[in-house]
Structure formats: structure tokens, C-alpha cells
Amino acid sequence: MTRYIRHAAAFCVLLLVALLVNTAWLQVVQAPSYDDNPANRRATIARYEQPRGEILVAGRPVTGSKDSGEQLRYERAYTDGPLYAPVTGFASQRYGTTFLEHTEDEVLSGTDPMLSGLPLWNDLTHARNPGGNVVTTLNAAAQRAAFEGLGPRKGAVAAIEPTTGRILALVSTPSYDPAELSGNGPAVTAAWARLNDDPEKPMLNRAVRQTYPPGSTFKVITAAAALDAGVVPDLDAPTDSPDPYPLPGTTTRLANEADGCENASLRYAFEWSCNTVFAKLGVDMGVHAMGTTARGFGFNDKGLKIPFSVSPSTFDSHVDRAQLALSSIGQYNTRATPLQMAMVAAAVADDGQVRPPYLVERTTRSSGGTVSTAGSRPVRQVMHPTTATRLRELMMDVVAEGTGMTASIPGATVGGKTGTAQHGIGNAGTPYAWFVAWAQDDDDVAPKVAVAVVVEDASARRGDISGGGTAAPIAKAVMEAVLHS
Image (cartoon, rainbow, N blue to C red; front, side, top):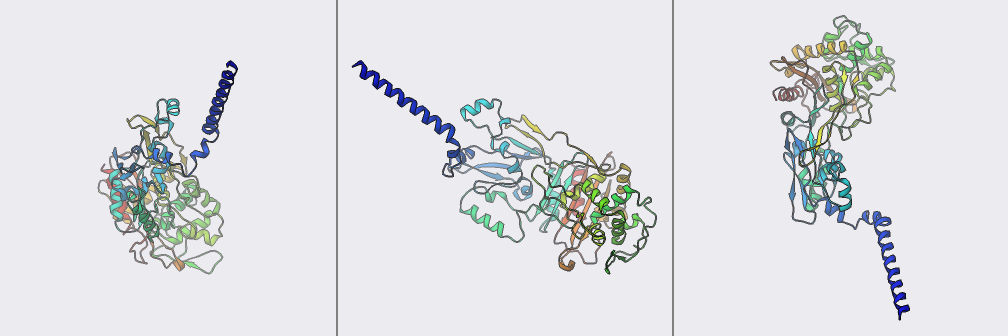
């Protein structure tokens, strides 16, 4: 009898060992395949079983969470969704995440290990931290001024604090309400199809993901290269520039929209946007010098993130002299995002220093404790401080008595550069209206804001030499909002 008991006990032990081995095999070896199985909804259910963290602007949340009462319980909600969509992006149960909702997803969803004081305990218990918060650098008044200034027109605005790189406004129009994509029902599917089929592309972030020919605003860079190299030693000296200017190696003659550009000084040429002067300067400088200066400002940088990625602005260094002439006035293959051109204006305002722009000031736990901060960022000196001083002088002239007078702000010093960029086959498209600028109160020791505005469907006359009538008033409103906040 005892022998049978021993055999039964041994068999039970064997079964127990087999059970333990099988359990270990399932939990350790096969667990990843089960976790990744599309039929396993537990991770998805867990993701939406608690409210998502908030994205904050000026201390106020512009996001929220709505209890749907469904299996995927909490859906994303937005305050002023179209206003902040280029910053927040969307968080959809069906279509995933974009922009800050994507790059800061671990913090917002509560999965970032830094949110927990006891991460090992959370690993053992599979507990989920409450979603953290993302504090942005945005100035709420500037964001609204940019959005309302663009109104129904297609375009974008980017504004930066020159001395830090903090992004103060990032607007793209037409926009959309990301709340339409939050859930997973038929309405979300219909909204997704409608938004993607819309020829106006409301989900395109034109401030950072669309590049345009920058037109005459690129002359800031050409002037910086010429002044830094000493090619133009005196702002008021004649430049030996013919009008019209024969493009090297071709029979094409480049003309001006403005009068008085023949042999004009750099000051006059900048103030009235003489194409011939800057095209010749670009050729005189050479493609290497022009390309080096453009790269210094941030062109051809494929790694810029704010924290989501920014489409690279481009300056083609493989061009002949005629193409270089056109590139030097912001045409041919030269392309820029509004954020890039705001960086150009900010560099002029900050003594020639380019500071990487950033959108997230810090991340916090739901209780308010800081998880991470923006920290210090590398600074690149793109031109001599004396060159930046002379460029500020030129930009101030544009606003004081040139093509950018509509951006003038009482009680403040404003410098700007207008541009009307031609595009389309044979330049037949309606010109893009550009304006880049910086501003400081008369009592300030340094400029507080740099801004770039582009309007795609500007009602500019073909003979208008600038975006001063369309883009400059929008820039003025944004700069006033920052100066008065």
C-alpha cells in the first residue's frame, strides 16, 4: 500500500513540475507572442481604462478625457481643438497619435517609468501610474492672435523667443478639431475619410511640415553672408549691380519690381527688395559660402525635432551660377518652413546666435512634481555679432519706411523683411506672401519675439513686391500679443 502511495505522490509531483514548467514557458517564453497578438485586447483596454494626462498652455489644460462608458473607457477631449491642433495633434483609439500626443505618449498615458517613485514595485504588480502632464512653451495670446489673423486663409505662423528658442506660437490653417478622431466608432471613420480627402489638407501642419519658396525673406541670409565675408563693407555704398541682371551663362535677364535698383546700396536694396542686387551678391559669394551660411541658419538639417520632427528646409548646393542667383533670392530650389524662417529672424535678433527651438518646457506627474525639463541647449554662432547688428538696422528700415510699414508697433522697435514668393509653372501661381520679423519693447534690453508668417492664397497683386499687405499685419498682431503679455 505504501508503495502505491509513493507512486501516486511521485506522479503528483511530476504533474506539479510539468504545470510549473508550462506556466513558466507561457509567461516567460511565449508571453511576447501573446502580448503582440492582434486578438489580445487587454493592453488596449488597459491603455484607455484611466484618463490621459494633460497638455498645458499658460498653465491651462487644452486637453481632457471623456468617459465613454464603453470597453475602451476614456476618449481624448480637446479645448479649442482647431487652435492647438498643430501642437497637440490627435490621440485616437483607432488611428493612433500625432505631434505632442505622440512624442509625449509615455508621459501622457502613464507608462513612463519616471512617473513612478517605485518602478520595480509597479513592474511586479503591473500597476499603472496616472498620466503625467506636458507643459508647453506656448504663449496663449500669441497663438490666438496668429490663428485669428490667418482666419479663413491658408497659411502658417511660427513665433520664437530669440534668447531661449522657446516656441511661442505654432499655427496652421485651415485646421480641424482632433476630438473628431478620438473614439473608434463610425463617426470617427467618417471624419478620418473626410479630413484625408479634403483638398485643403486641414491635418497638414504647415508651420513645420510644409516647405515653401521663401522669396525675398531669404535675402536676410544672403545679406548675412555678404556682410560676414566683407563683400559689402558699407551699407550705403553702391553695389555695382545692373538692372536688369543677366543670369550668368544664360540669355535670361532678371528684373525688379521696384525702381532705383541699379547699383543700389545694400540698405536700399534690402528696404525695397531689389532682386538684382541680391542675385548678384549670391553669385559673387559663390555656392560654397552661400551654402555654408544657409546651413548655419538651419537649412538642410534633417534632424530637427521640437520634439516632433520638422521637415528640412533646403538650400541646393549643387547648382550652376544662374541657379545660384535665383536661389539667393529665395527662388529656384530654395525651400523653407515657417519655423525655419522664424529661426532666421531670431538669429538676427539674438546677435547672430541660432538656438534650437523647443515646444515642451517640462513634463510633470499628475501631482505636479517635475519629471523632466527642457534643460540647456547648444547655441550656434552663425554670423558675427556686428553683422547681426547691421542686419537689425536694415530690418528696422524696412518697417520704418520700406515695404513692411504695416508691422510697425507704437512704443516698440520692430525689424522685418517682406517677401512675395513666386511658384507654379512659369511662376503662374498666386504668390505666397511672407513676412519675417522681430520685436522688442522700447524698455526691453533684447527682442522678445521673432515671427514668420506665410499666407498661401494671398490676394497679392502680381506687381506687389512684398507680403507687407497680407502677412505683415498678422505678424504685428502676434508680436503685440507677446509684448503686451
